[in-house]
Length: 130
Image 1 (cartoon, helix red, strand yellow):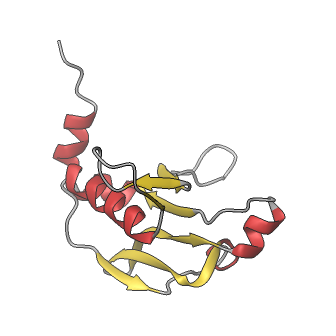
Image 2 (cartoon, one colour):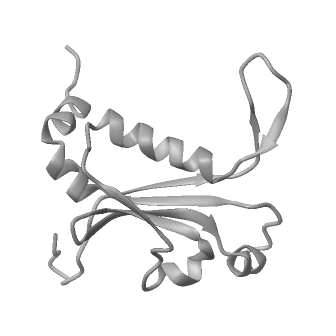
């Protein structure tokens, strides 16, 4: 919500992936992380929070996101007209400016709409065992 300074604050969850992935716990074979890995993490988060009803739309970088994500390698989760998450491969221009040589994948989830649709899950997440 709005603060005394007039700035609107919101809860967000960010995920950044890069580097190698082992295909299985029993294998030494590696591959570079990719968009499938990021998508699987988002699905796991939404499943754990019992968040349902979002639709994925490809190429949905808007506003500041357009300079952050690789053109054509970005998507978003929407519920109706509200975007709840944006995810994809980071822009080569951004990575170059940061002197990063590997591909990186990023997701940002707007937690307000997720919590609102999964209140029971939020209560479970913050319940302290006795």
